[in-house]
Length: 99
Image 1 (cartoon, rainbow, N blue to C red):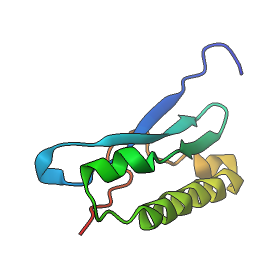
Image 2 (cartoon, one colour):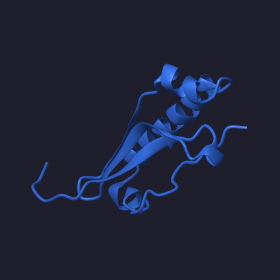
Image 3 (cartoon, one colour):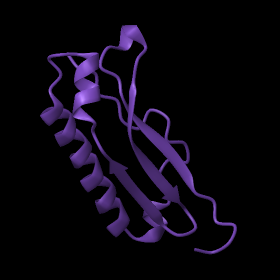
């Protein structure tokens, strides 16, 4: 890593019930334009998530997050000039509301 390269990040949150304004941080997306770096890591605490809502489909949430990890991996294979067109602001990158 070169000194001074700017890394930006976005926290991934699971929001079981929007009206209760509760959430669980479950992952992070890290981006550095100068290094053409874009990666996502996540971990779901099933016990904690189930305490927010009994009938939450953890498998479905995991599938969505894994799909997003694969999507970001594809972006990494794109030529640098193309991948740098990624948004500079990660707000609202992924929203999934449980039924």
